[in-house]
Length: 341
Ligand SMILES: [Mn+2]
Image (cartoon, rainbow, N blue to C red; front, side, top):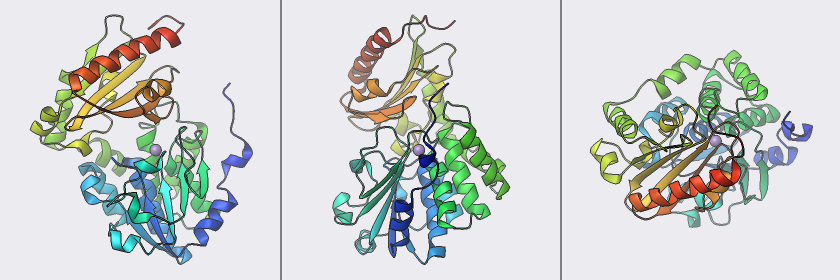
């Protein structure tokens, strides 16, 4: 049996609630290359905080949001704040962001210099960069934590807020199919469904609404998928030209690593993508209990045990060779059982 979190960590800490209640103009920021959890958490706070007489400002530069996540942006009615507006904030709530430099702030971190940060996140590698920190590697998603936060703050969870938070949990658990689909995350999802979350609509908008260009990119990733001779490592890649020839850009790389991951028996799945020239993003996934966090850290990355990432400078072919060699060495060092049985 896995260890259980302390009862203490099961509710939003009072210090976090007090910090938020003390804010007047509060900026809401997530990480670069925003995902459904990040946008869902920002959207829910954006809708809930006015009830506490707080004016929220969403820090979500539209050019950084993947096309399919616009559904969540529209649900929340999010309007991105300008750098000038941000300078007047008295609190910044950072969600789903493990390290301060990964915050998705227009004009960079200097824009929010001096504004105290309330850091709410579920990444195991969170660096506790806030004045207040509520981090829990036990949580499926930041959206799960925001649900508990809203309840602790006494905010109403409207059907739209429930929809946004459900989308966040659904995204980070890959539709409740991963190790983080805990009894608690399923319970929170059930609560959100009861509160009016539009479950079927979320799934359709996020998973069954590929544009022709997104579908063209999926074909590239399928076509480039390889399996190592021993069957333990599956990987794929998408070069800068392949991504852009498909009509996509860096924002459209999201969970395509699920394609190599879907092969039977693999222990490590990798996706190498070059959304921006010379910058190779590597998504690492560990299967059947194998943590890939230390492997990602070898490339100055981070994330979760089963799901991590890194950005590596260099040519995609050369980076692929280095990452694959490291993955095999890592498996030799960490895997004692035989591969697929
Ligand atoms: Mn997340």
